[in-house]
Length: 432
View (spheres, rainbow, N blue to C red):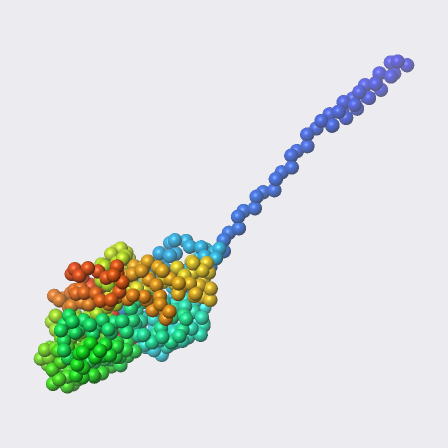
């Protein structure tokens, strides 16, 4: 009997041990859920429209403007900006308005249809002014780096801005320069009937009369003409001390040359439309000793002019023609407003443009109530020895005005094959 009970006892002990072992078994620790990867920031493309004449006689200036905008866009993209919580890629959409008002409005409508976030341009006043109504109606901010006719910003369009002095400021400075520096007593005025040329000539005439200059003749041509001998012959009999031309270098150069051929002794003065190396090419020896004006200060006197020139020439392998630094600044000002508004939506960043206080390449940029550059300076140059040499600066804030030391003008233009051909201004169809 006792022997038969041993197996039962062993079985009971085994079961107990088994139960104890089960009670001490460690359960595996619960695994933490894998951490969610940080959400990728959205990426958006911001379209910036740019318009200028890229074909025709003014193509050298239009391409120069385009290069200025291109350089700004490339630098902005290299910064990897984030606006409104999204990574931003800027895309420049550049179009040829041919310096023609009708084509300018066509380009403007194309930009609106493409839903651009802002516009840099146009180059010419004659294209900028009609296009500005289209941008205003669409609520798209527009900053021009070269259109100088006062009408552009006096239409009441909250979307219109410019980063250089206007023709009202330039006309007054031109008259002051004519009367004081050149000691002229009488002047004949010729313009090309464009919004720029006629506008600047009108401002010059008004300021000249106020300064006591006698206007002995007012004549006009057009922006396609090449023969001015009939006009100049009429003017010769009036014996003016000075002939002022409101227009572009394709007409200004030949005009100065024909003045010499006809034996006119008057000095020749023109605005920024003729302040170009191309003027010297077209006028030849007749350019010597003549004068021109440009809004702003010489490139080497601009706050960031030297650095900008090095970058520009290094990238594009051509000299700056004229407005590239201003167009670069216009692009930077547009994006600066987006950053401050933390939005790329035109309606949201537009109010910030008017509050701008931006240190640009060309100047410290701020706008008045019309969208004009505050405290715009005007500089004067003499064509001398095949170069454009600095004479003096009138207007502007004291810190913006350079010392009166000889300095070469905005940029000596190099003849370029594919690149913009000549200097500072615009050339045909219409200008600023």
